Image (cartoon, rainbow, N blue to C red; front, side, top):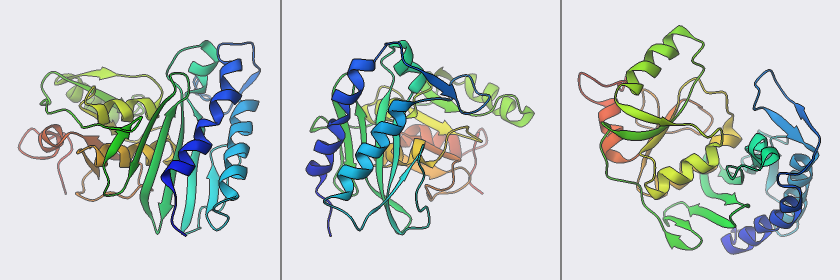
Length: 258
C-alpha cells in the first residue's frame, strides 16, 4: 500500500495539542544517560504511542520503531520516530524541539517529516519530489565553506575528534542547538550550510528524517569517506554541494573520500 503524505502529516500535527499545554511547564523528567541533555518525559512516550496507534490504523503493514518504546528494527518497511527531539528545550520553553518521523523501505529513507510543533511548521520530503516547509519548496544555500555556518555533532572528549573539530572550526562557525531536526531543517532552508555527524551521540531516529529533507532540498548527503549514504551509518555529511565538495576533495579536505 502506498503512503498518503497528507494523511501522515495530519496525524503528526495532532501532537501539537498534546504538547503545547506542557511546553515550559512543570513536568517531571528523568535522565537516560550521563549526557545532561539526554532527558525523557512521560510525554515522549505518550506522543510515540499516539503516533504508533494512529499510523497503524491506515497502515497496519508498516512496522513502527520509536526512540522510547522500540520496535522491530529488522522490518523492511517501518516508521522511525523521535517523538520529541530536543526534550531539554521543551522542558525549558526554548523553541528548538521537533517531532520527527521517517519512512524506511528496504534500507532507504523514502519519506520524512520534521514538525516544529511550537511554531506549527511542518517540513516534509518524499524521495524524488523535493523538500517543503508548510507546502512551500525549500532549497539549500550556495555559500562556500569559508565563513559558513555549520551544525556539528561529535564527542570532542576524544583526541581525534577534537583535532577535526578545531580544523573545521578554523573554516566555519558552529551552530549547536542540541536539536538535530531543527538543524537539518535549517540546512534545507539555506540558513545553515551543512550538518556533520562524526562519532555522534545521536541515533538513527535523530538523523533519518533530516537526511532526506536535506537531500531533496538539493543538498548532498553521504557517509564520511564514501559517496553513498546508508542511514544506519551514523557518520555522515549533509551539506550544500559547494561545502560538501570542499570538505571531501582536494589537499585540504577534512573528510576525504576513501
